[in-house]
Length: 484
Ligand code: ADQ
Image (tube, rainbow, N blue to C red; front, side, top):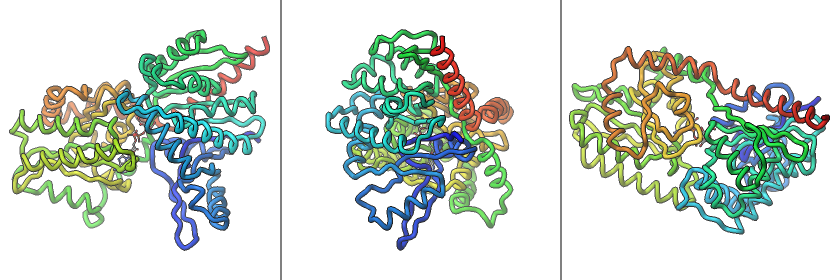
């Protein structure tokens, strides 16, 4: 029986080792949750890195880890510390990540990390080939594995391969600056179907293929070596029911069961005679997410509209991420200083303008915050999609709450009822914050009704199924084309 092979940089689970026993914890990220429906449907395996380097294993531990992974239909790709340094921290996160998000000043190009990126993509290919049977379908994810489609195609010309990019694909003028541009595109073109979050990313990719490689484009198809390669947009959704149900449970929960954060929020709501409204900000701590901009815009808002002092509070959550990359360390320092300065400037005995959490929170706490915040303020400078925007709206069982969203996110294309802002325009952000905090409830409900209907319909399962369906038809079209 044929199976689906899902491939991503990381496996969808985390391993914890206690006294030589292995505990597996499912990852909660968007990709892991999104692909779970595909992974648990029918026959499928997931190939990726386990999170432990080869240096961390002894033989006994390795056997146990492999057995634990096998129980979850997962297969690990063996990577060393040097691999992770060059491939993950190096080329993936110091070259591709900043370039694809238009941070050209952060983009480094080093021959050694590029070579490690190639050799690690080959290691992934070797594991895939070992596990691949005739008739299987392969679905590869994200920017760490751009070379993988072609490496698999070279060994298995007939296999059906899909590739999905979770981050933006930049315009040709930006993409052309990378020295290995031909190899990256040729690597991606090993796939039968290439998926992007938005139509713009799809157009950027096609234009790069045409201008860098000189291939002709027929609408959104590329005809190459007797193959039809299809390029399309598939905006990723969320597990709508999961957020909905968790929010419903949360709303019914007795006070005694409240989590620590919820108790704090309640305490805060009782502070003073004026109830301060909560403005929520949640992201991984990443320079693409516009966190420093957001803080400066919030400061500008308090200066411009002092009537909101004591009446609005920014609750800012930043999840630690890539903490040993220098740009991320600098950003962390900048954010620490900004929070300190703004709190120092405006704080009153009964009111602190910013609550800042630098940690990952359990799912229930995220739901607490989604359901308790009157406004969500998401201001990325660039973001492939932004799932937090969708999760916030899905969690609003009461249909209240106002989403302010950067126009630079993929999500803004589908969420036109949100208040869309330019993350570099502090004037606009300040005015929009005021508008959001004063928005009548009927208007909030009207906007969220429309947003929720769309999120419910285009949930993550539909996203995955649409992609798999399209991959199947692309392959069928190629077979017809080859027979002609
Ligand atoms: P990310 O850059 O990680 O993903 P995003 O889409 O917002 O960004 O997803 C973040 C996830 O982390 C959300 O599911 C959120 O619930 C969770 N999260 C955020 N803060 C948290 C906290 N403090 N504690 C626990 N969990 C937290 C990349 C791209 C995005 C794209 C996704 C999916 O950069 O643009 O939307 O992939 O394709």
